Amino acid sequence: MEVIIRPTTKEAVNLTARLIAAAIRRKPFFKLGLATGATMEAVYADLAAMNRAKEVDFSRVVTFNLDEYIGLPPEDPNSYRYYMNRNLFSKINIDLGNTNLPDGMAKDEIAEGQRYEKAIRDAGGIDLQLLGIGNDGHIGFNEPISSLGSRTRSKALTPATYAQNSVYFNPPDSMPKRAFTMGVGTILEAARVVMLITGKKKAGIAAKAIEGPITAMVTGSALQLHPSTVVVLDEAAASELKQTEYYNWVFANEPEWKPYR
Ligand code: GLP
Image (cartoon, rainbow, N blue to C red; front, top):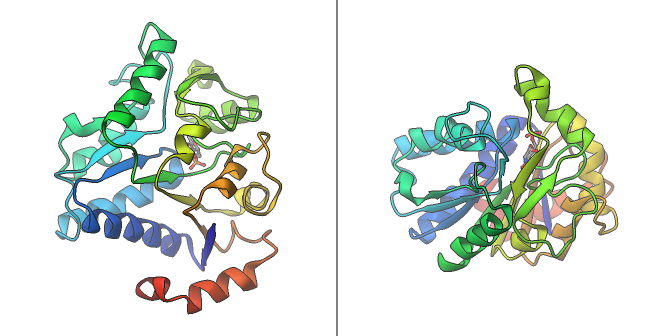
């Protein structure tokens, strides 16, 4: 795992977008894993700006989102399909037919999980998975005690997640209590993972995921098992990390980070 701390949220977001754009430039037939949440909106705005400036081309990119609420159709403004169309897909030159999310309206939940896993496999696997982290440490919707070997499936959401996300729903209790999510095992198979964590509120959970023990209680900590993960944080989110001096030294000195300094 590598940890990069940028002074401001804007710089952390921009570095994340540049890492994604650079990876796509290296391999145009790219399989990109995407995340939702407030944190990602700025990343998608940066990617859309780079696309407009012809710095990155999405015409041959295939995307797989992490998760979707169960019971929300694509046209529901709170569905993740709607979020993705609004924040990214409608603003870049991607073929909508190449964008994948679990189907929140699928009748057979087990079959839907299997279908999604097969779609990822058939595409040749994910080249880069973008991740945020929930207040309870989840990645995707892999809530505490999710198996670290789990695959795409339906999952009941925790009260902490409900409190975090129901503010977007009107009324708040119309938020679904369950979601489809890629499993921790699915995420760990991505060739590369880029996680973005911003804001003071996430400082405690960021420290647990990055420097704490690997535990199903904080599924973000499973990334410690992944061979190629970069976690990008702003200073506020990094404020409870213990090894910041080391992380900053690596970023300042390792040649691979030169273009990003
Ligand atoms: C949701 C998503 C996660 C995301 C999290 C963080 O729960 N399922 O993938 O990481 O939100 O959201 P925010 O960026 O709004 O804090």
